[in-house]
Length: 112
Length: 113
Image (tube, rainbow over all chains, first blue to last red; front, top):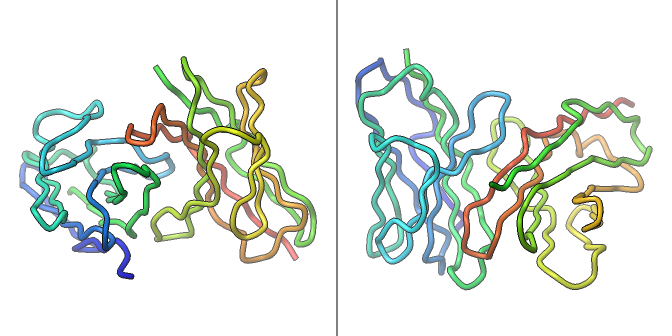
């Protein structure tokens, strides 16, 4: 059984740039959730995707967007990067009927 | 709005000693409660969860937690800690199996020999 994998693991961007983070779900899972974890904080919910549609969104601006593909993998896109976007971005997959989240190791984004 | 409070930012425990990490939540209905552990540079691993039924739940690595509705608490316990338990621990609450989770700010656990 393959777990949740995220790429890239680390990246550095400058303010105003755009970034795409990728996530492959655990085998058999059909739901993907994205969380932002700032340094010293708990993860904060960004949004969730089920059946390729957004199903719930946290308090994040529209420049945070996502996609889910037919194979249940997912992307998180952030436009017009700001310094405060520097964080660990965690992807979690689950079964819609189960809800138990399995997290990847995250993508650490640094915005300079 | 749902929220989670973990009052202890950092706890230091001797190896072999018992451990209790505190978690208080705010939620308007029956909550789904979780404890996750995060080692440095890693993602989150689920230790245990409470959905319904027995209020004392057992998890992996010898951890247990007790749901107390009257106190809005879900404290994590372990009778004897090991050096490998050093990590960051997060309590989380959700309203249903498919809803978002709200996490606390975490408790960092340090183990001394």
